[in-house]
Image (cartoon, rainbow, N blue to C red; front, side, top):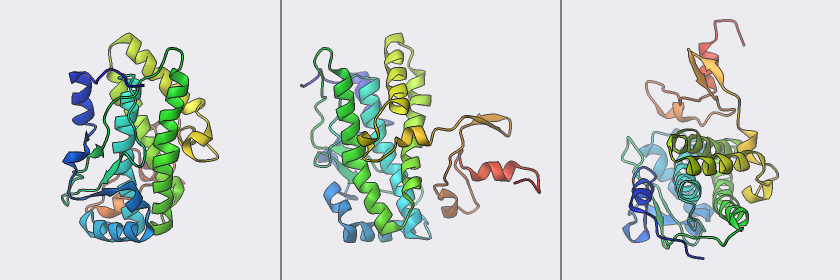
Length: 260
């Protein structure tokens, strides 16, 4: 069922920092999900993208592209679900993939053909939530990650942790700043469900990757950090070398000489 339209405030977040937009405004650096799932097309894209983002291999280009796509897809979909209580159609036939980069920063957005929010009947929110999550992860992202793995040679573990850290950041940071108690409670409930009760099949996997990659915080250089289990390889595109804030290599760098 169609839900009430997004409010001006909701729309400002979705189209601002979360980069949602109508498909009519798509960037010239864009393609359909079906095109990206074509291995020859995917290979051409990674070859085009690698020198632009200074990635020395297709595997690294695939990892960094996946980080951007995960941010665009999960940010808009899960923010709409938890903060707005409205659904977005992140189906493969409703989404376009943008991959614009200016040589320094990503410029890409998430164009959708149909932006009408999806609602639910009384008592049906759990089923509605399951359907949104299955569409986002199992039907959209899982096939894309499978193709990037086959074509780019990047580990699926890296691709799924790239996805997981985007979800963590959304709930731990942006949604944690919401002050309205009932909305905060809904966000907390959704995050707890995603981490602990969402079935593996909703991700198209035999495990829940959000649960698998969630680590306890550790002290690092005087601050509390949830370090990743895998490295996204971003540091290999930088000179001088820079690391992501949760890179597992940071712990190794912070240890005294001689410690493992």
